[in-house]
Image (cartoon, rainbow, N blue to C red; front, side, top):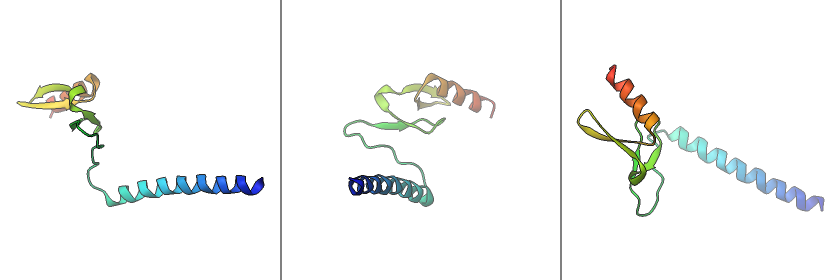
Length: 86
C-alpha cells in the first residue's frame, strides 16, 4: 500500500515539475505571448492588460482613428486615460 501511494506521489511531483519547467523555459525564451488557439475564433489582444479575447466578445473603441479591442470597459477606460495624458 505504501509503495502505491509513493508512486502516486512521484507522479504528482513529476507533473508539477514539468509544468514549472515548461513555464520557466517559455519565460526564458522571452518574446510576446502567443494567443491561445481556438479553432474558428479570431482572438485580439487587449493593449491595456495584454489578455487575449475572442474578437466577437471584445469591447471595441475607436481611439486615435483606430479601432482598439478590450476585454472590459475598465481596461478601455484606463487605456484611454493613459493615452490622453501622453
